[in-house]
Amino acid sequence: MILIPILGLIIFLYIFCIFPGFKGSRKIKNSVFDTDYAHRGLWNENSEKGIPENSLAAFRNACEKGYGIELDIQLSKDGEVIVFHDYTLERMTGVGRKISECTYEELSSMTLCNGRERIPSLQEVLEAVNGQVPLLIELKGESMNSELCNKAEEILKDYKGAYCVESFNPILLARYRKIRPDIFRGQLLTDSFRKKRAFLYLIIDNMLLNFLSRPDFVAFDKEIISSFPVNLTTKLFGVKRFMWTIKTKEERDLARSSDANAIFEERE
Image 1 (cartoon, rainbow, N blue to C red):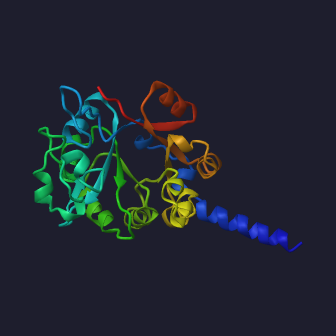
Image 2: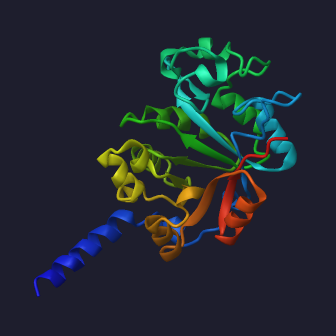
Image 3: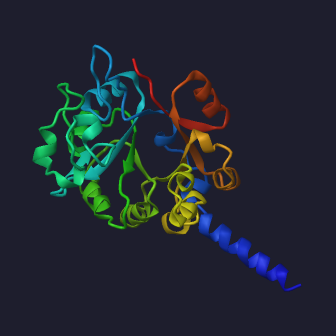
């Protein structure tokens, strides 16, 4: 008989850990949930237009088409908030250094994909978008350092457009929850444990750190659409769903049929 209360306690603790934010559970309507998002903007680095990802041109292109914009932010060596996905510069600039090793002046002088577009700052992106479409801002970071959240909020606090934040890192979401509890937060999920085989990723993949961040939505890799934690959190508690990265009509149909906003790539 003692197993029954122990099992009950385990279930209680599990529900407590994965329980999402109250705004998400009440299915609050917000413009950030009313659109699909162009992944790193609407880009095509191989076309005659030469529009690279996470560039001002890609963001302007998305605005013209009326799509929301998903983008990535991280800090330069001197603490400036820049828009760039990778932690290293090699793929997009050919420079064999890390973002964290370069100053903003150095980064802003680098061209993307040997074109004319340069690495933008978050401030430049906000000025270019100017509230035309909602923003889905990924907070990049693999440590417990949450300085990015403070720096980003200094810039975003006066922005009049709609935006929400997301991250793979629950620590960053927890920090943003503390400084801006009114902004919608999303937990990014993929099968990290299978790729990296570290116990911490097993905890994150099962959303057991939701008690820190209390996310209002879940943005999940399309490959884990059947994930138990994803479906429990979104279907039982009514949390919004975002699916990435959508590249085909079939995948877009899958997102729609599962009541998920699409984070998509549409390379013109």
